[in-house]
Length: 124
Image (spheres, one colour):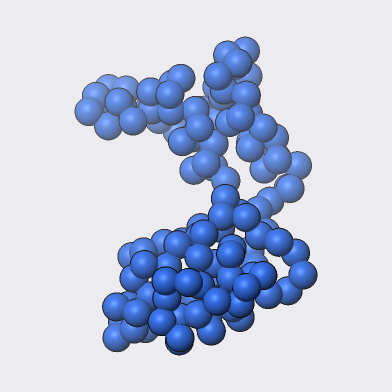
């Protein structure tokens, strides 16, 4: 959640620019979070909301994780958040092979409807 807050604040605070400025980089610490929280800049409202949720312990929910074995990465290389969210109702991801579809179907079922923005798909 801290990463999300910092990414949302980057446009206003230009945190990424500090990478190229050693003097500024030295001062990047937890005080950045306090600066975001105490700022009156309306552009930081979303970032402030994420930090407020964090302080109130309204944390993101972790539902499931699937680690794909290296030999199967060819089959799963194009799975997206949209594939996973749409497989909830249909049980099949249209552009995937049968084994990929069955895995996506298992991941998607369960009552609540996930939206693509609810999911994080890492392709490492």
